[in-house]
Amino acid sequence: MKKMLRTIVVMGMLLAVRTLAACSSKKEEEQGVSEEAQKIIQTIMNCPNSELYDSSLAYVIGDDVEDAQAQEEEMKEKREEIQENWKEEVGDCFAEGALDTFLDQGMATMYFAEAEQENLTYQVQEIELKEKGEVNETVQVSLLKGDKEETVTLVFTHDSEGFITEVKPAS
Image (cartoon, rainbow, N blue to C red; front, top):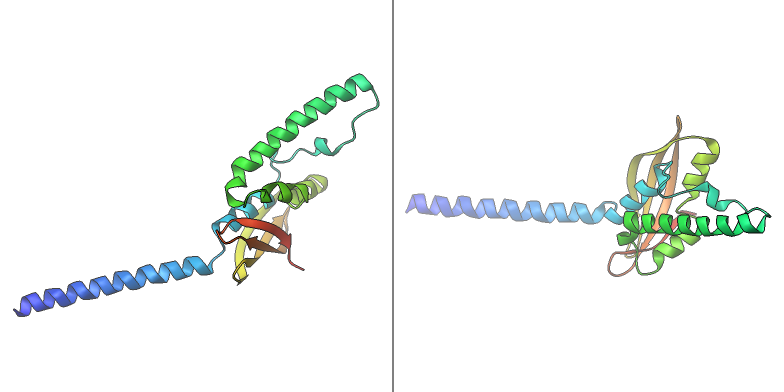
């Protein structure tokens, strides 16, 4: 009888420990930087990345009409290819239409353009949650720009399903 009681007590304790461990890991997950924010940060701040940014798309097309039409078609194809690469890379992180807005506002390519202009490689060193609310999370990023470290703070806004609706620098 004592042996059976001891076995039941041990089993109960093991079950309690597993339950507490599961609750603890769930709480840690809720308090950390969301996977979507981490993925976006890694994507936009580790540069250069020719799959996601091509500075030649920002240049003005020449005056020669025949060349201009060919250049325009080539640039359109390259833009579409890059847009598709963005969708593959981080499209699953964004709410409907939010990726297009993110790309149109320039936040997505800001670090790529900067790295190219300065002829440097940017690399994310650390990602830390500063604040998490109902729909926002504020994230601090340590970024190595060449050999200089810089701290950047971003605010990610989520919809009710957890998808990103907006990314902006903290004010």
